[in-house]
Amino acid sequence: MLRLEKLTKTYKTGDQALKAIDLDVPKGQVLALIGPSGAGKSTMIRCINRLVEPTSGGVLLDDVDLTKLGSGALRKARREMGMIFQEYALVERLTVMENVLSGRLGYVGFWRSFLRRYPQSDVDEAFRLLDRVGLLHMADKRADELSGGQRQRVGICRALIQNPKLLLVDEPTASLDPKTSRQIMRLITELCQERGLAAIINIHDVALAQMFVPRVVGLRFGEIVYDGLPTGLTPDKLTEIYGEEDWEATIEKVEDEDVEAAE
Amino acid sequence: MPVLERDDAQVWRRRTTGQSLVRWFGWLLGVAVFVYCWQLISASTTWFFVWDAPRIANDIWTRATPPKWDYITQLGRPIWDTLNIATLGTIIALFMAVPVAFLAARNTTPSALFIRPIALLVIVSTRSINSLIWALLLIAIIGPGVFAGVIAIAIRSIGFCAKLLYEAIEEIDHGQVEAITATGASRWQIMAYGIVPQILPAFAGIAVFRWDINIRESTVLGLVGAGGIGLQLSASLNVLAWPQVSLILIVILIAVMISEWVSAKVRGAII
Image (cartoon, rainbow over all chains, first blue to last red; front, side, top):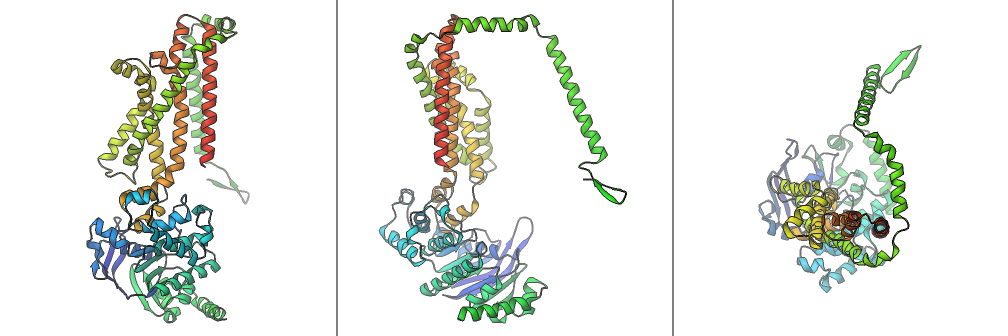
């Protein structure tokens, strides 16, 4: 459904953030993108919806090359891709409801959105989503009154109300505590399953990725160095992605957690 | 940060000896310039007038007190004019300042090469000329009266408001803008959802702050004939009617106090 073809990004400074990335994401597949800081994970996600302009290569969403679209068509294409951010990126001074509804901006006209006159179907869907993530009672609160986990749930609602085919998730748990992190990851993967969404999840935490996703892609210096099952991430592979470190401890911990999760 | 080895102890000093000497000479030079200037000023002062000052001041004080209270009936209209000059001037200025600020802010300007310098020029040129001078110019162009005052205040305030506003725009959190962009929002929707909510508190703060300043500035506009209570002030000064002058000053003081109270309340309510 999503295919990256020789996707390359070279910054003005000459840094090559992405070196001819080829990647195929079938419909409904959730994959985790791991790699050290500066490996190009964020750049890759942002190149897909062109928040960052790729230098060359193609991004094919259902056989439409997004890199060739004009601004109007790009806006339409962006509606198909929901994005979730590390620092939540909610509009802090707007209410939870306004934040969720802002996911519909690509579908409604300027004056409707400016006057907050969203179609009733959008409002119904917003309430349904808020209920699904357990924040219905917070609908009228201002976004800056919420805790980190709650804000991320609002962020998820905003991405889902776009009715996307694909979720681009940039470090969803990096600002959250371990327990909330797992809850958020579980929520994202569950929702993807319910709706048959594909997702690319940037994540630092290898153990967390292994717990929740069926496919892991490892990025290093802008190149894919691993693509496979989470169980295939041996210490050797992790060393290849991240560099030398005692990985045994980390991996053991993962297994402990799996047992704990199963209980 | 020099560290000296002395008797096996590491002695730490904030600056090296050289740096301290440079600083010492800097201060010496500063004091020398100050003393020299003092001497120049002293030499060109007519000291008789200075020694005389307390007596004259006392004389004016006795002439000015008590204020001529029944003159207040003639001040209602001028102080109302002054308030209107300030308020209307501020509103007009804000309407002009908002687009200028968006054109000047590095992250919203359509062209950093052509349009931004023009917007910055508008800001600098309107800001650098005092409203009294704008009033003098405008009286020559559109004749004396309240209207000239309103326009003078408005022009003077554009630069001030636009500068503070564009700085607020440049400081917004880009993540929120990115998130709104990612939903497929149009340019204007990104502005309305991603940028405006973030700068609204700054905008309201700037508006009442400038209104507060403009009330003070508009009290003197009358001195050059641009309407308001300054007209009364200059008329009273010209005929040496000191009891009227003191009453006018009291009225101005009260008006400024009220405006400061209002602006403090409004700013408190926004944050």
